[in-house]
Length: 180
Image (cartoon, one colour):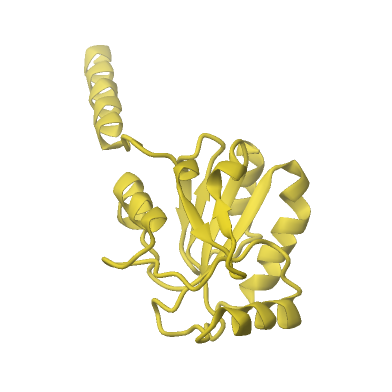
């Protein structure tokens, strides 16, 4: 019986290992354009936790901006970066960066980093989203706006969260606190 459990454990370990990502590149090997046109070099985020969230102004989940700002305020001094990635991949975003920036500041008092309008799925997705899919599988592909990808201090994907997961959910906060 013990041999059977040991064998099963070894098989499970090897299957888990073989399904793990190779990570030829890490999150820190990429960059993206900010909403105001500067380059956000992810190397500047080394040894930090990054919550990447594709956002949209006209989505039913847009009210999550409040909780994203709350997360940023609570944990930025401890090493969390909240990165909003406005995207029109689901046809629910404004047409230009200036309007998005104003919308976020006026309606939600957002001061965490935002990127330029960015594709997050398909062949035109930004390279960091292609990297996420390649290294973490289908769960890293945004199915809708406000999909969340949590990057750990090693620059690897720690976990992903569907749009319905609130930024201040117990589940997400526990993982953030565990890896900070």
